[in-house]
Image (tube, rainbow, N blue to C red; front, side, top):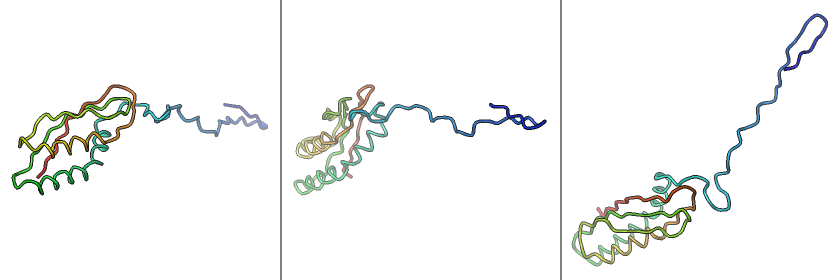
Length: 129
């Protein structure tokens, strides 16, 4: 605050410049997301593979007349952005190896970003109905 005296009147003059913006870390640095990957973000990446899941089920329907299986996968997403580790936890119709392999490979092809923090483990249900 600066005081300006003009005749017998004293004015207080404040600074009209806004304060500087807060210093924040960049979201990405050297190709690594500078925060942990959230479940919501990982789910968005997985949803991008939905068309591939549909192709797997259509291919299986051509091979079989029986009901196709629903699955529950566990997906381990490492922090370095490498290929996720995919495990089948549950399948409703056993023996549909082609379908299971197709879905597993589709999940493994999802590219999750390298991030800081801890690895993320998700349970991913995929239903053929």
